[in-house]
Image (cartoon, rainbow over all chains, first blue to last red; front, side):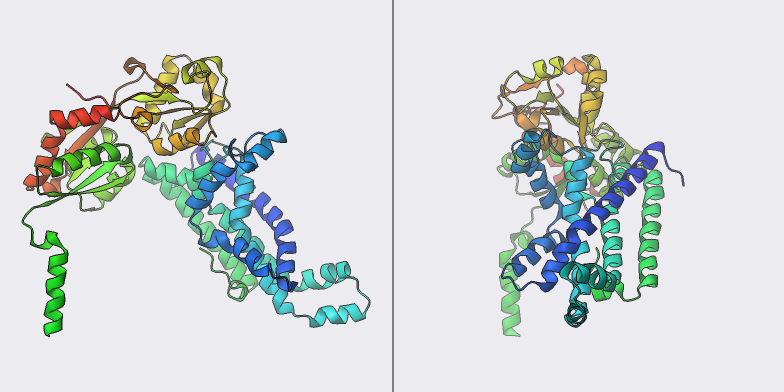
Amino acid sequence: MQFTPDDLTAIRLSLTLAALVTALLLLIGTPIAWWLATTRSRLRNVISAVVALPIVLPPSVLGFYLLIGMGPEGPVGKLTEALGIGTLPFTFGGLVVASVIYSLPFVVQPIQNAMEALGRRPLEVAATLRAGPWDRFLNVVLPQSRPGLLTAAVLGFAHTIGEFGVVLMIGGNIPGETRVVSVQIYDHVEALSYGNAHALSLAMLVFSFLVLLLMYTLHPRAVFSAGVHPR
Amino acid sequence: MKWRSACLLALLLAFPAARAAADQVSVAVASNFTAPLQAIVALYAERSDDSIRVSSASSGKLFAQIQHGAPFDVFLSADSEKPDALIASGEALAESRFTYALGRLALWSSQAPPGAQQRLESGDFRHLAIANPRLAPYGRAAKEALEHMGQLDAAEGKLVTGENIAQTWQFVATGNAELGFVALSQVIDGGEVPPDAWVVPREFHAPIRQDAVLLASAADKPAARALLEFLRSPEAAAIIRAFGYDVES
């Protein structure tokens, strides 16, 4: 079992991408989850459905729309060009944007479930102790939702590492920029280099298993209580 | 019981294949040749009762499927290496093998003028799409053509690769890449080369040989041999040419 220099570049790229995406998702996903857990707005179901879309949509559909939407003729592409950043497909930045969308439900749902499980009682108690909304959120909600946040981080990270279809559609397979591990494995398989494919695939398998094992060890009921089925 | 036999009869009537004497031939075809094959099969249907079932995917996937016992009779690859490998491992018959089409490469731009060739030479593009040279014969040919034109070094940092020639086409069609080396067969329109494409001269790259073989499991299947024979006929050659390929004379 041996990695080629290209394999190592791909591994480094996947880890960087997943770390960055996880950090962004926790920042974006936590307020969305809080809103979904507490709102009585009629829009709640609509937003829930939009957030959950990547779970049901084939990655090819998502990748196809992203390719068109972020391309020079698409709305996002026109915006990014007007801002002077050029178009996003074939760039690392493009992968970050795509992965944030793709992994969003895997981060939002566990956090949302943890927050819903919290109930109104602790917040009311905190309010009687004169804790303001921010105080309550930072010092009651977040610490109490820790299992959910941890599950969200692990799932977001693992799901981004395992991302394939979307990257294949918009990445352009550029070494060190968009050629992540899953694409590298696919290349090896298609080129019939089964030895190289085995090495990387086995590494992925072991990594995924360890990540999940770690999560179940820390929080035995984390995934089931979060109600998300990782795939 | 009566009801059951009525159902059975209805089923038999609904599936003509179950009662017809004609044979079925399963063809595994490389994605890039699916459209011409369908045109050829349509013509073939006028003179034969055999039913032809076409499955298309990348040659690499079909190759792996054949190695693992996929029930195909004929394999139309996008290259010559995979038929070679199948012959070497005894999964295809050496005597059946021939080059059914020679791929032509086209440089294509979906943008306003200047044309594709001038754009490449002036360096006026951000991305040049090619098929993955490691996987796709058209990608390898694209790289050879760039080298031949002395543009490989200049293009190196701007290359984006599609996993196959269909994705490469998509990158150019959506405007994400201003330029791309695609298969002529993808951009040819009713036998005419469109103005935004430039047909790369044959001598710029090694020939893209697309080879056909009969698989060993179909050695005793005359219907499969008959189809391969038709693929070499002048009528089939005319269709193949109209779709933007060369045919060996």
